[in-house]
Image 1 (cartoon, rainbow, N blue to C red):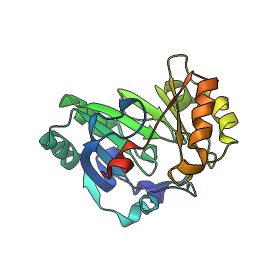
Image 2 (image 1 turned 45 degrees about the vertical axis):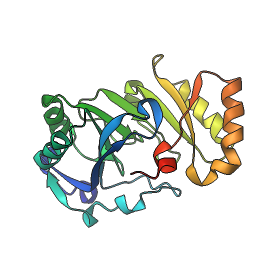
Image 3 (image 1 turned 90 degrees about the vertical axis):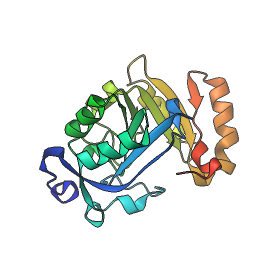
Image 4 (image 1 turned 120 degrees about the vertical axis):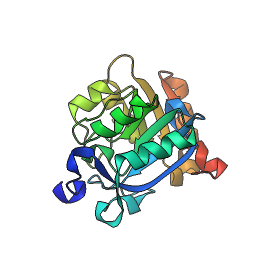
Length: 209
């Protein structure tokens, strides 16, 4: 944990793989303009991860949070999405407070495997089998997004649907490399279990970040 967090002065500095203004392509906020801040460092290690370069935090620059806040403000984005890697490896209270002080909403995308920090308008929990989420993050989630890599993941999705709060939105999203094989199965599953909604990686179809 210490090597991943790189002793970033209680969240005043953060290792950043990339940050950019785009459209949210997944889940509840699909299609919304959003500034993405992808933090480096991950101890979950999904075999199908499409941003494996984010795993080693030591390979990426450590930035003062004010640099990030200024970039979000300059973009005109109304929303900042903090993602990773696994963003909860880092103390996120200073960053999220600074963003909200500028009137910018804060969303997080997390596996939930590390303790919750920060102040959030929306918490998207995307649990992974490689390291299960903590109960505190499950309870706080506004959105449960399950990545479907094989058909057994439907049962695994229901396991967490039973644990989240009653207002949490439920999404199934096919893992990108399996979209041809599993899209029909997800469609049929949602038709039979309409409490779930479909999440698509729209940004990949549009070829935007």
